[in-house]
Amino acid sequence: AEGSSQATADSARMYSTCMFDAEAVKKAVDLSAYAQCEIPAEECKLRQLILTRVGKESQVRSFQVKLRDEEDEEEEDWQPAERRTQVSAGLGLFDVEPFKVWYGAVGAPCGTDCGVDQLRSVVVFCPIAKGGLDAIRAWCEELVEEAEKSDPRRFSIYRWHLRHRYWNLDSRAPVRPLESIVLPATTKAKIVDDLTEFLSPSTKAFYLRHGIPYRRSYLFYGSPGAGKSSTIVGLASAFGRNVCYLQLCDEHMSDDALRDAIHAVPSRSIVVLEDIDSLFDKHRTKKNNTPLTFSGLLNALDGIGTASGQLFVMTTNERHNLDEALVRHGRVDLSVEFAAALPEQATTMFRNFYPDSPDAHRFATNLFDALGQRPLSTAALQAYFVAFRHRDAAAARDGVATLIADLDERAASRPPPKRTNLGSNDDDEDCDEEEDVEASDEAATGITLPLMATAFFFIALRRLLAPAGTSLY
Image (cartoon, rainbow, N blue to C red; front, side, top):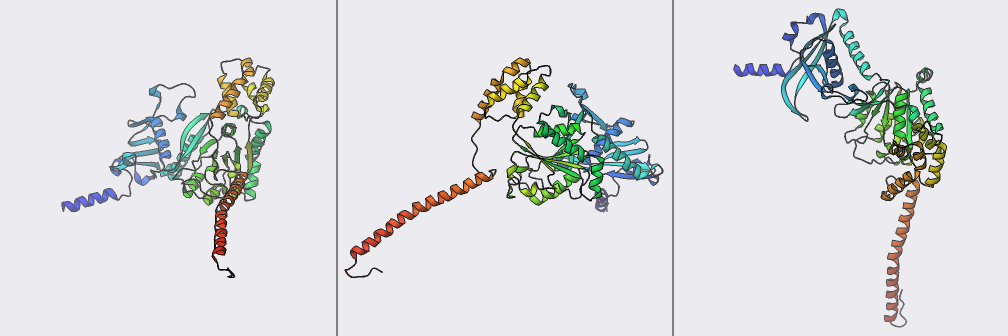
């Protein structure tokens, strides 16, 4: 009897239709008059938003403390230790008019990949007379919208959490004025004008009226340090967008994971697919161990099931290594090349750092006369001005020899490129094929000549040994 009673108790703990302590809740909540809504464990972001709000608005006596996210820190000042923590509600039942929120532990502790843990339950109650489930849903949407709302001084950076399948707020970065992004004027205007036109209400109405998925995809390609990443930051700042980075080369990134990530992108976001050429070569050969397939990537870019104004930016240093199916019309709407710095950019950057100096054109002339055939990235140019930040404009104008010396030193220490089939351009592949043919011809010649010499030797020997008048054939 005792064993049967224990089994019944164990079964009651294993199987339950109630995710809260009913006896405790009944003391404060008339369950027959309240709608109840469980917040699933996988919705950890929403749970934290609810508990943080409860900790601020309710008469709470039970708390939990964690390190404060970067988004909650002041923009510039270092925070004392006591201000680098964030308080939210702990275990208990709390009042947040008109809601009641239950946060409790369920079951026994168990081992996980992250150590010992215990299932936690979050349940929101609302009087049916005050809206019930609709009121709970509206409250949750309000919390999410507030969390994702763009701060005019900052933009949010998200990264996809592959294990828990949600967009994790990685940081909040200060906005960067688009004017500080030093690109050729025509290139910047091309990007900004295109995005401005796409985001206009008339364009959205046109897309929807004609059944075209409302999204825009860009390909930024060119040499490293030419401003691709900086341009993304500038666009996010200028258009009030979040930036969402997807690590497509992760060993756990599958077609399903990518589809889920695209469907769950926070509103008003730019989805960045960096180094897109690192996944597949131009012949669709996979370059890494990720389970993501080429068709899965194409489906994500096609926006199947998503038409909410999403913005995609793919970046690559090697445009020629991309399969044409990846960059065809409809998958890439605008391709923009980021090349080596031009005198125009050097002039603009000098003016940005020394706005009161009239020497911008003279600096650009000095610099490009000294450069010769050396390529110069905008990243290297910016590093030069950072190094001269304690010097005046005249010193920066006349100090270009320092930049040239740095470029030469880096070029000398750079290892020579390896000749491989992966990452080579068409000309390289043609050269490789020619070399292979030449090598095979040389090898064939090296084998054929000794064989021919041996054959002639035996023919001559037979002629010498054969009796007179005997035919050799």
